[in-house]
Amino acid sequence: MNATLTRRTALLGASALVLTGCASAPVPGDYAKETPTLDLRTYFNGPLLAHGLFTDRGGRVVRRFIVKLKGTWTGDVGVLEEDFEYSDGAKERRVWTLRYLGDGRYSGTAGDVLGEAQGQAAGNAFRWAYTLKLPVDGSVYEVNFDDWMYLVDERIMLNKAKMSKFGFGLGEVTLSFQKL
Image 1 (cartoon, one colour):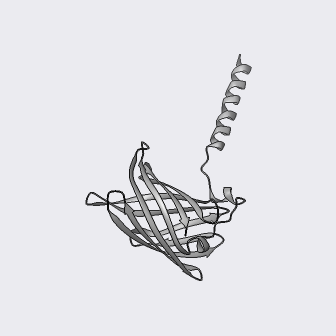
Image 2 (cartoon, one colour):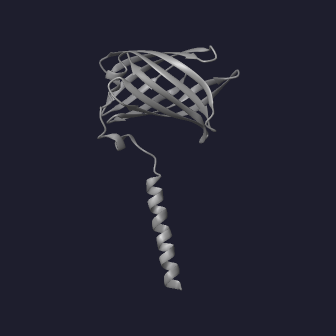
Image 3 (cartoon, helix red, strand yellow):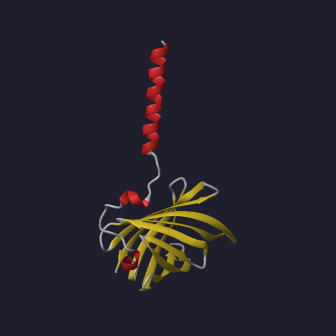
């Protein structure tokens, strides 16, 4: 009986390790061999158009939007202008100053971003982490973004961002970028 119990315990432990390994969060290096290779200095250079939506943590679409973007780079410093038009008629503008730091690493600042955003590109993927000062009903909340972008081809990039506060998921933003 003890031998059977020991085997079952060992099997359960091994299964838990395998499942835990499968559930680990992705990192940019997981996509290092994927093509086409994403270089933000190339992709976010010139005009782009994006279509997106925000879903709450239950998966309900709360807001839809279009973003007109224009990127310009001088060496390793870029400016990305984003003009948002929401389905409810609201408009918003964000201007990023981006810096290429080498080895696929980027940093960025914007007027409504707390501190400095940090990002890492590898293969066709880019992970971008930052805290956004998000206005909601007259208040401003500091919301964490875990932003992933995936280059599909030289013109199309898909973006999925998870929003959280104090470690609790608030919702997701999904975008499709098109280089014009």
